[in-house]
Image (tube, rainbow over all chains, first blue to last red):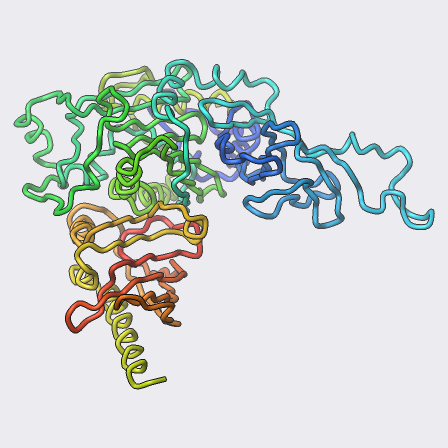
Length: 412
Length: 159
């Protein structure tokens, strides 16, 4: 099935053709038009590379990227591909080097990606070597634009995309700043291989409707229900979102809440944790918001679940595989009690998390279910068909927002 | 090896053997009994462990939290039926102080899904502290250090 033949359903963002989750041509077009196109993608935290020569490797889509602390003290990002014959320049996930040297033929670059030397450039004893008109300055690594926001560094290959603060927007930018108020400190990282298309995970992240239904830990242990107050903010253009849950505002009485959940299989009375310390959160942000899940188009997520803070990066690895990277954060300012609290609450999230492990599997279940249904579509009309900010979480507005941002970039 | 050392080795061998069978037989309710009450149990990656980062993919600081983990897996969390097979070997006593033993051991865990798909789900080392409680050794600390930083799909059951 070729790219040109995908016609988006007339119902717009409330119908998603299943083909977009499995078609190889569409996937290749996404790598090109989205991931190498006019989008900002998270690279590193600014303080992850404190010293000159520190570097990390990551990806824009599937394209390998080097992020370094350059000679000028700034963060630089380059495609991790030697200008000579395409070898990976940095092989390690992270390290420190004064020069980035390709192992294949010893071509060396500075920390900003400029080619500094070519082995045997003048040949040996007057024979061989590069032509006289070869100029080092014409052959550096391909450079990315980088930009900073709240201690986060993003990169893009697009010269056109507006500056990062404008791309994130004031509405969502304020919600990023709300969480990252201190000096971030990495508590640990991990990653998860999901057997589904990357968009099934970003849909899941933007899906405020599923949380207390799929993640039955919430309701089984009476942690949270959808009847708790909350809502979803959707940025102009749809691509960025922040959903939130309020701690002390119930939308309906307990009795009515029980009735709404009466036929939902996860409700079980009388089950309590014997050691509930991992649920003991403190009001950290001064606004009674207990959970905030935020995304920046296409593949960045910032999570606050009580006092557990994490960045998530969604990396495509083929039509049916995704790597979900997790970076758990605390702040330098944390006292010992807060440091321990964050670690205990990290039990809620991540690959083994009480309220997130299902997300690792559910995309794979969808991926398995849609085989043979490539001409059909999903149905997404919770909260209507639009993608505007709403003061309820019983909506799929922010998922529709993702597709609103996705379609024009892909030409659908 | 003295008879006392030999006895100790056999005790440890028996302990890790029982631990493997407990998990692989899906007797998860008995799993917390291998630990002391104020135990520490963490599953982490070699990368975090070697960098001294405190995060746990699972981070439990009491036997009651282990009980809760099993209760959540039984009553709340949703995951496909799967079976673990632990191979634990190379059990080594690293140190001994105040009656406690510092022990490392290697493990491999093969995971088999309901359709029969098998994969090498986890490989790594246990970094443990054992204390005597009555006639038996119990884990005061157990760190499950995964060689890989990646988890395939999800990590539900204990390692």
